[in-house]
Image (cartoon, rainbow, N blue to C red; front, side):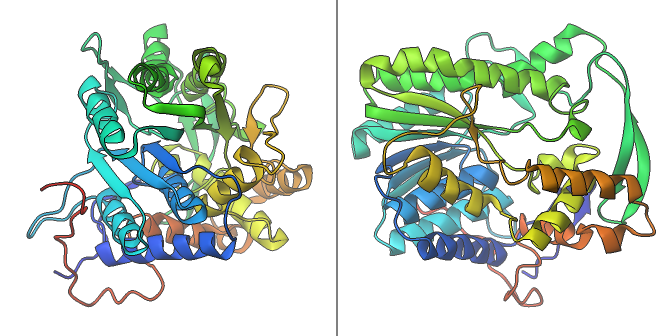
Length: 400
């Protein structure tokens, strides 16, 4: 079928398998161009492996370190006459390329919060790999069915204490406007957001993997977080999401204690602001990213997810001397180029000046739009979108 993008707000309802394949190939070529990651992982579990940082983590470990990878995700499969999700096509593309390169790669499609998927994953590790030496936790979901209580928790994106008013942009139309976001009305919203996006499920995974003997001696595990500038604090770091991220970071010493007898370590990596399905949904953030991209591209310091993950692995998690550099709170800071004083000063000045009329001149709103559509396999260089595409692409290791 001929596949074109159809959008509703910050969601693209369609995905293109050929664009997804080219995106994955481009990321692979970047990783190869950087050379092998010395002392990198050899058997990797990526939880939340189909898009964004999780997908790039899988690509970087496989093609930068030659690692066998197992990816866990929850995506809609493709079938004859019906499109799969972008994450499905990304995973199909990754497995195709990994298998052609002689790399082990298998995937599990299901609810990663569930005990059933945890058991299924552990069984696959034990059967095929024995143990894993790196566990990447990169889940992004709006809701979670708690595996112990059966309660469905839904996260909310709200400030705490008082309303938050600031500029935002509709990246489809380029209209800059003012938005006011009402604060949470009760603590239950905060607790639900923590239940979905905090550290409990990460802890459950590590506990279950360890109990099953599926973690190698010296194992490392990393989860992803974000801090950002003061500009976004009310809606992000000081809001409901920030409470969840605080909980995620507070899980690190718990996991360190759990992994002590395996000489293992856990980390939270604070990553750069990038165009993702999640970030597109947060008011204010698309405008901030558009300005950030303009500044960082001019300075030659802009990175996408694959550049971030390659640098995380090669320059943070697997350094030649074995030391993992962290900040005063024990976090890996791969957002260091974004948070540089000169970058933030320029973004702050542009923020004051931004209007609908000058947006295209002082921001990289076109780059933002392109990256948004790239997430779904559209507007990828080299793809002819007027040609018929095979929508029924399968992930090789998953039986349909």
